[in-house]
Image 1: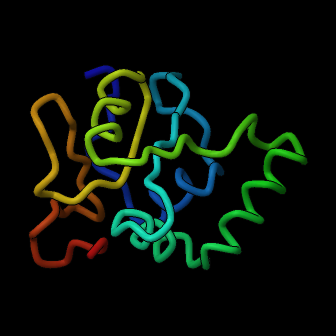
Image 2: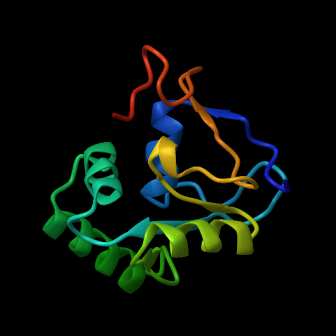
Length: 123
């Protein structure tokens, strides 16, 4: 794995998905992979960012117009495509249900916890 990060705080994760952090400690650019509206992963993302779907779309439009981001996150229509994108792009990060994690995908602890552990902040 090229990403040296094994743990993030909830705040750091939020900054990553809000495009406030642009690269990993090893210099590899962060590439955001998200699911489309109405999916469980998208609902988790919106809770993480404390946004509605409309707020999220407006946020990314503004980020691109201001030049803060070159493009909105890549939207994957299926979990399978989401997994393939994570494996294909160095520096990619996504939110995926724990039961969808496959070999080759790295799980990053959030606030010291893995999915399914008590205290894990993304439910």
